[in-house]
Length: 379
Ligand SMILES: *Cc1c(COP(=O)(O)O)cnc(C)c1O
Image (cartoon, rainbow, N blue to C red; front, side, top):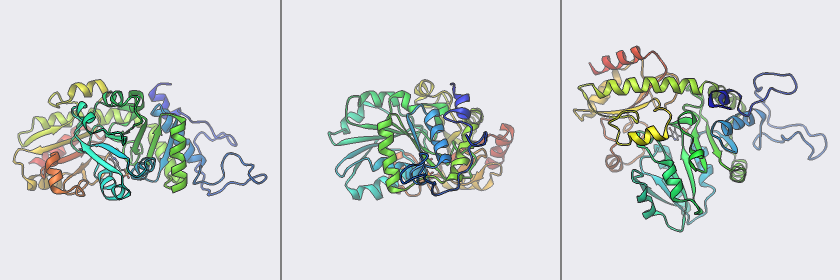
């Protein structure tokens, strides 16, 4: 099956009792048994629920994995991966991470004696310098949030091939339409399904996709034992979102490119961060690794002034000033004051998350309206 077909049919079947084309929302916590221990495969909805199962089968299908798991949030999915580790284990992570992931690593899991090393993955050979015999997990995000830096997934997985180190990729920004980390050698894909997979800003959800059934089973055990599952109604919403994923990401990418080019030529703009621009330092990698370049665009002001970015964000109308991303509607965000406020100021400065940085999640509206809105906000 090809991708446009998979998002609609992958892992899906009509409901057996009635032929219902869509999976029903199974609002049940428990399932009747014929005799003690004799059941239909479903016992209790924390372990498995048919609506969540339909979503999980879709997730496995679209990411080319063996097993999908759906969680109550993206962070609950990351929490599950970290619980594979033991005290003393080390994690090497890309330094420009989603703020909530950074907060979980440094403020929750550090105290359970996990060690985190954050490195710039621009030059993959530098990773060898920080890997020790205690390193058990490499955590990647590509493109990163909010500076749109890329990591060469294949180069990283080649580097640790044969070692007892898992490679996990947060594929939230790219989605499986743009890149397939498991095909590039990764072991686990993670999503904030709140974003592009759900696609309509109406649900908080997370996902993991494991490359092998064995790893999928280990992750499922942790999910079952610690309980961070996605409910049936939210599972239905994400499954419905996935059906239009390919169409939406095509349009997000078209509009993202138009907005990035407009910004690049605007006299008030200093830097534009978008992997589809030739000025992006990793444009060649972007062309190799990604099918297209998506809808996330960040930029800074020539003036370098925080007030200019705030004024701009107060003026946009078609773009809504809000956290989050990946929905059909365009959103604008101020990372230093909003999504990335949990990262200490000096650390933000070191990474380049300056006080005049604006991040746009370009939606699927008409591009003329988006450009007119930006033009008005600069004026
Ligand atoms: C939003 C986001 C998360 C966290 O997901 P939630 O669904 O908000 O818990 C993780 N990674 C990235 C890249 C995100 O954008």
